[in-house]
Length: 365
Image 1 (cartoon, rainbow, N blue to C red):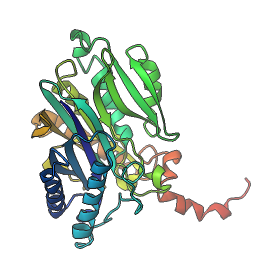
Image 2 (image 1 turned 90 degrees about the vertical axis):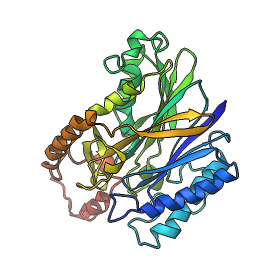
Image 3 (image 1 turned 180 degrees about the vertical axis):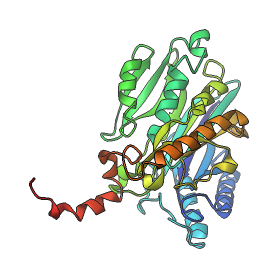
Image 4 (image 1 turned 180 degrees about the horizontal axis):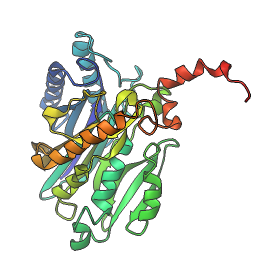
């Protein structure tokens, strides 16, 4: 059967700074989505949180970019903001709700969206990744390794269904345009783009043999939408696994290396992406380090079976330990690059107003 999976997130206020969602926010969101399930607007849902981001995971039959589903998500975020965030005076209440003129589509409105309509397979394992204190380009390296790196994914060599490679749809977030590149033959061209994580972002991945959708990620960059710093983007994505796609273990393997991503404190620093369980998905040290959680579900006739908290595993303890070492190293740089982002990224942060004050003081050398 065809089913649409929509993963929609928003930062709509946090307890004690930017580090965690308040339990009441989750409860109000659950109540709203449960009402929608009773009316058959959605088939199933799961509400979660990573750091200060509330995550709505929904299945339905309305298709991608459904005004009904996007309106449900928007109104849920608004209701949580009014009933909980503002009432409790939580920090940055409604931060990701960038406009009051909502017209049925969340594109350009602030919340991050990863959604796709898929034909449910006989068995449909799906891993949903949720990150805080970073940007959509944080998925570039792991998505490359999952679907294009045989040193990560053995199936690329030994499974004939993976052997033909994958198509990557890459978005230029500065120009709002996309390009499709095919691996393995265009791997170098792909890497030439996605290594620039602040501009070229992987939007989706397809199996080349039959164009089966394998992964989809949110790509919205809040600073480009608002024209100023309004918090980091905190992306979501989901990856289908097994049965002619990378195994769940291959999907998780890239996160055993806590690679450097942009974000962290004030969205202005590079830091290691730490894989954590939901109970440890709280961003405290220097508002971080950046975190990623992974929930595993089985889709069953559109119902969400699970989740399994996939990073709640001592196998990722070394990755967390290494992330802490890298965090120590990066923090020792203080305000200096490369700990702080480069000038092309900093122009969208609060540094711009500081530099503006000094403009009239510069003189020819």
